[in-house]
Length: 255
Ligand code: BT5
Image (cartoon, rainbow, N blue to C red; front, side, top):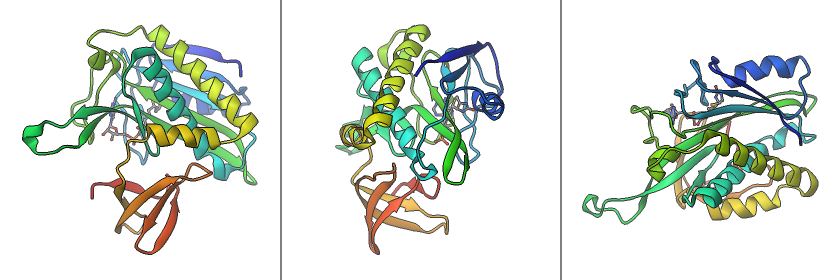
């Protein structure tokens, strides 16, 4: 895949900007980067704080896969980014289904936990248009905190590469590494399928074994995580049996 990259000092949302290009036929590999976003979007209508110094970008893909497999793309991006950041900066970056990059923060023993807490380094927002089960365009919006100031009022505490490493990171190098890693994974996915992503996901996932899921009926169900399904779904065992969860249908919450 070759990239065509445009960089803007400020945009509302790179996803929104790229959506217009996608609708007017822009090619796969079009990348929009904004130094700052004034209306950055998260999932479920949430907002994404995107001040100067972070990596806020969107990639246009036109994968020849059924729309039901679109979540595979979010997984492969999360996994390839986590691996690339681990290799380059030696950070223990993990992936949290469906779309987050987390960094572990050891629990303080005085707080009584032997477990590990995580801080959120970044997130992915997938948007797409489909016709007759095929994908017309898919936009992967990626936000990673690099050197930016961090938002304080977040559900999961936020962290950045600079905070974790104790020094600023070259944004240019970040983009070079991230875009290269994603292109490699995307091409491998198209030629050999999703299994290699599932294997890496097992190693990188930070989900605990037992989770609670909030379904569209707003009921909270306890579940045991079994693994990643063939279409990027989360396979869990609930009291009613084994279920495959699609990221757009459920929210994970505290037990
Ligand atoms: C995500 O949503 O994690 C997906 C974020 C995708 C952002 C990129 S930036 C480039 C592209 N253009 C866009 O407009 N969006 C994409 P979600 O899982 O819903 O997480 C949102 C929640 O994360 C918020 O409700 C806050 O609690 C928290 N949050 C907001 N900004 C954050 C930040 N910079 N770092 C960490 N957490 C943040």
